[in-house]
Length: 280
Image (cartoon, rainbow, N blue to C red; front, side, top):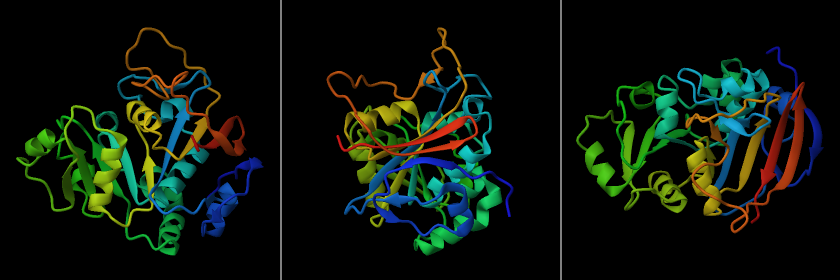
Protein backbone atom coordinates (compact mmCIF):
# COMPACT_ATOMS: atom_id res chain seq x y z
CA UNK A 1 0.00 0.00 0.00
CA UNK A 2 1.29 3.46 -0.89
CA UNK A 3 2.40 5.45 2.11
CA UNK A 4 0.43 8.68 1.70
CA UNK A 5 -1.63 10.52 4.29
CA UNK A 6 -5.31 10.77 3.34
CA UNK A 7 -7.06 14.08 2.81
CA UNK A 8 -9.09 15.32 5.76
CA UNK A 9 -12.59 16.27 4.62
CA UNK A 10 -13.69 19.55 6.21
CA UNK A 11 -16.83 20.02 4.09
CA UNK A 12 -18.65 18.00 1.44
CA UNK A 13 -22.05 18.89 -0.03
CA UNK A 14 -22.64 15.16 -0.76
CA UNK A 15 -24.51 15.87 -3.99
CA UNK A 16 -24.28 13.75 -7.12
CA UNK A 17 -23.58 10.13 -7.92
CA UNK A 18 -20.60 8.35 -6.36
CA UNK A 19 -17.83 7.34 -8.72
CA UNK A 20 -16.55 3.76 -8.35
CA UNK A 21 -13.25 4.59 -6.64
CA UNK A 22 -11.00 1.77 -5.51
CA UNK A 23 -10.52 1.31 -1.78
CA UNK A 24 -7.11 3.00 -1.95
CA UNK A 25 -8.44 6.02 -3.86
CA UNK A 26 -11.44 6.32 -1.55
CA UNK A 27 -9.11 6.11 1.43
CA UNK A 28 -7.07 8.98 0.01
CA UNK A 29 -9.84 11.26 -1.23
CA UNK A 30 -13.09 10.15 0.34
CA UNK A 31 -16.23 10.02 -1.79
CA UNK A 32 -16.11 11.70 -5.18
CA UNK A 33 -19.39 12.57 -6.86
CA UNK A 34 -20.45 14.26 -10.07
CA UNK A 35 -23.95 15.44 -11.00
CA UNK A 36 -25.70 13.59 -13.83
CA UNK A 37 -25.57 15.62 -17.05
CA UNK A 38 -26.41 14.84 -20.66
CA UNK A 39 -23.40 16.63 -22.15
CA UNK A 40 -19.63 16.59 -21.58
CA UNK A 41 -18.81 17.81 -18.07
CA UNK A 42 -15.83 20.18 -18.08
CA UNK A 43 -13.64 20.33 -14.99
CA UNK A 44 -10.31 22.03 -14.37
CA UNK A 45 -7.45 21.40 -11.95
CA UNK A 46 -4.87 23.96 -10.83
CA UNK A 47 -2.57 24.61 -7.89
CA UNK A 48 -2.23 28.19 -6.73
CA UNK A 49 -0.14 30.09 -4.22
CA UNK A 50 -1.90 32.09 -1.50
CA UNK A 51 -1.40 35.22 -3.57
CA UNK A 52 -2.91 33.69 -6.71
CA UNK A 53 0.20 32.69 -8.67
CA UNK A 54 -0.10 29.46 -10.68
CA UNK A 55 3.21 29.65 -12.57
CA UNK A 56 6.50 31.09 -11.38
CA UNK A 57 7.52 31.75 -14.96
CA UNK A 58 11.08 30.58 -14.31
CA UNK A 59 12.74 28.38 -16.95
CA UNK A 60 12.81 24.84 -15.63
CA UNK A 61 10.43 25.75 -12.81
CA UNK A 62 7.27 27.02 -14.45
CA UNK A 63 5.03 24.03 -13.69
CA UNK A 64 2.85 23.28 -10.69
CA UNK A 65 5.59 21.69 -8.59
CA UNK A 66 7.13 25.08 -7.91
CA UNK A 67 3.81 26.20 -6.45
CA UNK A 68 2.78 23.03 -4.59
CA UNK A 69 6.25 22.17 -3.29
CA UNK A 70 5.83 18.76 -4.97
CA UNK A 71 3.00 17.94 -2.59
CA UNK A 72 2.22 14.24 -2.94
CA UNK A 73 -1.51 14.59 -2.27
CA UNK A 74 -1.72 17.22 -5.00
CA UNK A 75 -0.02 14.79 -7.40
CA UNK A 76 -2.33 11.95 -6.35
CA UNK A 77 -5.49 14.04 -6.80
CA UNK A 78 -4.21 15.26 -10.17
CA UNK A 79 -3.80 11.61 -11.14
CA UNK A 80 -7.30 10.82 -9.91
CA UNK A 81 -8.86 13.55 -12.05
CA UNK A 82 -6.86 12.45 -15.07
CA UNK A 83 -7.91 8.85 -14.54
CA UNK A 84 -11.63 9.63 -14.60
CA UNK A 85 -11.39 11.92 -17.65
CA UNK A 86 -11.90 11.07 -21.30
CA UNK A 87 -9.87 14.00 -22.62
CA UNK A 88 -7.25 16.28 -21.05
CA UNK A 89 -6.85 19.74 -22.60
CA UNK A 90 -3.61 21.70 -22.44
CA UNK A 91 -2.26 24.69 -24.31
CA UNK A 92 0.87 24.71 -26.44
CA UNK A 93 2.59 26.84 -23.77
CA UNK A 94 2.00 24.06 -21.22
CA UNK A 95 3.65 21.66 -23.60
CA UNK A 96 6.61 24.00 -24.10
CA UNK A 97 7.02 24.34 -20.32
CA UNK A 98 6.92 20.55 -19.76
CA UNK A 99 8.12 19.06 -23.07
CA UNK A 100 8.92 15.58 -21.71
CA UNK A 101 5.59 15.20 -19.94
CA UNK A 102 2.63 13.14 -21.04
CA UNK A 103 -0.71 13.90 -19.46
CA UNK A 104 -1.69 10.62 -17.85
CA UNK A 105 -2.57 9.62 -14.30
CA UNK A 106 0.30 7.17 -14.11
CA UNK A 107 2.82 9.80 -15.14
CA UNK A 108 1.96 12.23 -12.36
CA UNK A 109 1.61 9.67 -9.52
CA UNK A 110 2.97 6.27 -10.55
CA UNK A 111 2.43 4.75 -7.09
CA UNK A 112 -1.31 4.60 -7.83
CA UNK A 113 -0.95 3.37 -11.41
CA UNK A 114 -2.91 0.17 -10.74
CA UNK A 115 -5.62 2.06 -8.84
CA UNK A 116 -6.10 4.53 -11.68
CA UNK A 117 -6.22 1.70 -14.22
CA UNK A 118 -8.90 -0.15 -12.22
CA UNK A 119 -10.93 3.05 -11.88
CA UNK A 120 -10.92 3.53 -15.64
CA UNK A 121 -12.00 -0.07 -16.11
CA UNK A 122 -14.86 0.39 -13.65
CA UNK A 123 -15.95 3.53 -15.49
CA UNK A 124 -15.69 1.64 -18.81
CA UNK A 125 -13.12 4.03 -20.22
CA UNK A 126 -10.75 2.65 -22.86
CA UNK A 127 -7.00 2.88 -22.28
CA UNK A 128 -5.70 6.33 -21.50
CA UNK A 129 -7.44 9.69 -21.94
CA UNK A 130 -6.70 11.51 -25.16
CA UNK A 131 -4.23 14.39 -24.78
CA UNK A 132 -5.62 17.50 -26.46
CA UNK A 133 -3.13 20.23 -27.39
CA UNK A 134 -4.73 23.56 -28.31
CA UNK A 135 -2.77 26.00 -30.46
CA UNK A 136 -3.93 28.73 -32.80
CA UNK A 137 -0.61 28.78 -34.67
CA UNK A 138 0.91 25.34 -34.08
CA UNK A 139 4.69 25.61 -33.93
CA UNK A 140 5.54 22.54 -31.88
CA UNK A 141 8.18 19.86 -31.69
CA UNK A 142 6.37 16.81 -33.01
CA UNK A 143 9.11 14.49 -31.78
CA UNK A 144 8.02 15.03 -28.15
CA UNK A 145 6.71 12.04 -26.16
CA UNK A 146 3.12 13.32 -26.19
CA UNK A 147 3.07 12.89 -29.99
CA UNK A 148 5.28 9.81 -30.21
CA UNK A 149 3.51 7.68 -27.58
CA UNK A 150 2.13 4.37 -28.80
CA UNK A 151 -0.19 3.97 -25.79
CA UNK A 152 -2.13 7.26 -25.81
CA UNK A 153 -3.83 9.25 -28.52
CA UNK A 154 -3.01 12.90 -29.09
CA UNK A 155 -5.34 15.45 -30.60
CA UNK A 156 -4.14 18.76 -32.01
CA UNK A 157 -6.96 21.30 -32.01
CA UNK A 158 -6.07 24.33 -34.08
CA UNK A 159 -7.46 26.87 -36.51
CA UNK A 160 -8.21 26.02 -40.12
CA UNK A 161 -4.99 27.76 -41.15
CA UNK A 162 -3.05 25.97 -38.42
CA UNK A 163 -4.35 22.60 -39.54
CA UNK A 164 -2.98 23.25 -43.03
CA UNK A 165 0.44 23.85 -41.49
CA UNK A 166 0.36 20.71 -39.32
CA UNK A 167 -0.85 18.62 -42.25
CA UNK A 168 2.59 19.04 -43.77
CA UNK A 169 4.22 17.23 -40.83
CA UNK A 170 4.84 13.50 -40.73
CA UNK A 171 2.89 12.52 -37.63
CA UNK A 172 2.37 9.10 -36.05
CA UNK A 173 -0.97 7.39 -36.59
CA UNK A 174 -2.04 8.09 -32.98
CA UNK A 175 -2.00 11.88 -33.62
CA UNK A 176 -5.11 13.47 -35.09
CA UNK A 177 -5.49 17.05 -36.32
CA UNK A 178 -8.90 18.67 -35.90
CA UNK A 179 -9.45 22.12 -37.41
CA UNK A 180 -11.83 24.06 -35.17
CA UNK A 181 -12.58 27.10 -37.31
CA UNK A 182 -11.16 30.51 -37.93
CA UNK A 183 -8.78 32.14 -35.48
CA UNK A 184 -6.61 33.61 -34.39
CA UNK A 185 -7.96 32.63 -30.96
CA UNK A 186 -10.18 29.58 -30.52
CA UNK A 187 -13.31 29.75 -28.40
CA UNK A 188 -14.12 27.20 -25.72
CA UNK A 189 -17.13 26.08 -27.78
CA UNK A 190 -14.87 25.36 -30.74
CA UNK A 191 -12.39 23.41 -28.60
CA UNK A 192 -15.04 21.23 -26.97
CA UNK A 193 -16.69 20.72 -30.35
CA UNK A 194 -13.39 19.53 -31.81
CA UNK A 195 -12.95 17.03 -28.96
CA UNK A 196 -16.48 15.70 -29.53
CA UNK A 197 -15.88 15.45 -33.27
CA UNK A 198 -12.94 13.16 -32.55
CA UNK A 199 -14.42 11.41 -29.50
CA UNK A 200 -18.24 11.50 -29.60
CA UNK A 201 -18.53 9.45 -26.39
CA UNK A 202 -16.62 11.97 -24.28
CA UNK A 203 -18.27 12.47 -20.89
CA UNK A 204 -15.65 14.22 -18.75
CA UNK A 205 -13.15 16.78 -20.05
CA UNK A 206 -10.28 17.89 -17.83
CA UNK A 207 -8.77 21.31 -18.50
CA UNK A 208 -5.23 21.55 -17.12
CA UNK A 209 -4.17 24.80 -18.62
CA UNK A 210 -3.04 27.20 -18.90
CA UNK A 211 -4.46 30.37 -17.35
CA UNK A 212 -5.34 31.85 -20.75
CA UNK A 213 -7.35 28.77 -21.72
CA UNK A 214 -9.04 28.77 -18.32
CA UNK A 215 -9.92 32.42 -18.82
CA UNK A 216 -11.51 31.56 -22.17
CA UNK A 217 -13.64 28.83 -20.60
CA UNK A 218 -14.72 31.06 -17.73
CA UNK A 219 -15.55 33.93 -20.08
CA UNK A 220 -17.79 31.66 -22.17
CA UNK A 221 -19.35 30.01 -19.09
CA UNK A 222 -18.02 26.69 -20.38
CA UNK A 223 -16.39 25.44 -17.16
CA UNK A 224 -18.50 23.34 -14.81
CA UNK A 225 -16.07 22.81 -11.93
CA UNK A 226 -12.72 23.98 -10.64
CA UNK A 227 -10.52 21.79 -8.44
CA UNK A 228 -8.05 24.17 -6.81
CA UNK A 229 -5.18 23.16 -4.55
CA UNK A 230 -4.29 26.15 -2.39
CA UNK A 231 -0.64 26.01 -1.41
CA UNK A 232 0.71 27.80 1.70
CA UNK A 233 3.29 29.47 -0.55
CA UNK A 234 3.37 33.25 -1.00
CA UNK A 235 5.11 33.69 -4.36
CA UNK A 236 5.08 37.44 -4.89
CA UNK A 237 5.03 39.33 -8.16
CA UNK A 238 7.35 41.76 -9.84
CA UNK A 239 7.38 42.75 -13.47
CA UNK A 240 7.96 39.24 -14.81
CA UNK A 241 5.53 38.61 -17.68
CA UNK A 242 5.60 34.85 -17.15
CA UNK A 243 4.43 34.91 -13.52
CA UNK A 244 0.79 34.13 -14.18
CA UNK A 245 -2.38 34.21 -12.12
CA UNK A 246 -5.18 31.65 -12.22
CA UNK A 247 -7.03 33.47 -15.03
CA UNK A 248 -5.26 35.45 -17.74
CA UNK A 249 -6.40 37.19 -20.89
CA UNK A 250 -9.99 37.85 -19.80
CA UNK A 251 -11.48 40.37 -17.40
CA UNK A 252 -14.49 38.72 -15.78
CA UNK A 253 -15.69 40.92 -12.89
CA UNK A 254 -17.61 43.11 -12.57
CA UNK A 255 -19.33 42.66 -15.94
CA UNK A 256 -18.93 38.86 -16.32
CA UNK A 257 -18.28 37.52 -12.81
CA UNK A 258 -17.91 33.77 -12.31
CA UNK A 259 -19.38 33.10 -8.87
CA UNK A 260 -18.69 29.55 -7.71
CA UNK A 261 -20.58 27.31 -5.34
CA UNK A 262 -18.30 25.45 -2.97
CA UNK A 263 -18.62 21.67 -3.27
CA UNK A 264 -15.93 20.41 -0.92
CA UNK A 265 -12.99 21.48 1.23
CA UNK A 266 -10.24 19.03 2.10
CA UNK A 267 -6.89 19.40 3.83
CA UNK A 268 -3.49 17.77 3.70
CA UNK A 269 -1.36 19.38 6.39
CA UNK A 270 -0.90 22.98 5.15
CA UNK A 271 -2.48 22.52 1.70
CA UNK A 272 -6.20 23.05 1.10
CA UNK A 273 -8.04 21.19 -1.65
CA UNK A 274 -10.99 23.30 -2.79
CA UNK A 275 -13.70 22.35 -5.24
CA UNK A 276 -16.11 24.84 -6.80
CA UNK A 277 -19.07 24.35 -9.12
CA UNK A 278 -20.10 27.10 -11.52
CA UNK A 279 -23.84 27.29 -12.16
CA UNK A 280 -23.42 30.84 -13.56
